[in-house]
Length: 185
Image (cartoon, rainbow, N blue to C red; front, side, top):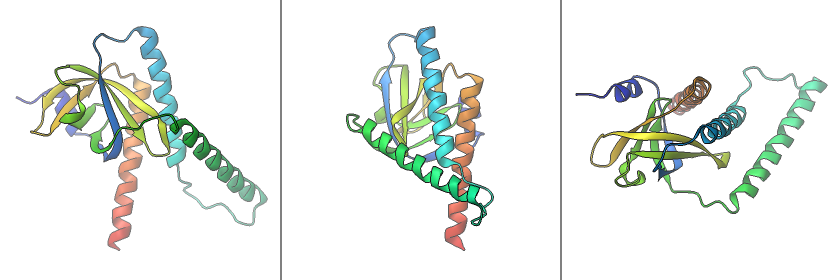
C-alpha cells in the first residue's frame, strides 16, 4: 500500500540537486512561538533565494541612465549580500553536500542523515548564496524508499511557506531544463 503523502510528493515537480543538508531529532513538538519564528525565518530565506535567483526577462536599455543605475545598484547589493553570507559562514559548520529531492510535501533523503530511532525531526536545507541561513522544516518519517533513502513528510506547513517552496522548486526546475537545452544545442 502506498502512502498518500508519498503519492502527493511524487506527483509534483521536485527540487533535485546537491545541497548541504542536516537533520536533527525533535523529541517534543514545537510551541506556537517557535513555529511562528521558524515560519518567519523560512519566508525570509525563501524570499532571499527568490531575489538571488530572479532573472530579468527583458534586457535593460544600455543607453538609459536609469538602467545603468539599476545595474550598478544590483551589483553593489550582490557584493554586500556575498560579504554578509561569508561573515555569517565564518562560525557556521556546514553539513556535507548530498543529493536531495524535495518539494512542499516532503523530501527524499539519504537514510544516513535521518536521526536513528526517531520519528520526528527538523530538516535543514542550506542553499548556495544563502548558506548560513537554512530553510528549516519539521518532518516525520513516512517510509524507507530503498536501502539508502527515506521519505519524510513535512509538517505544519502554512500556505505562504508552501507556495514559496513550490515557486523555488519550479524556478530551479525551469533553470535546470534551460541548462540541459543549452548544452544539447
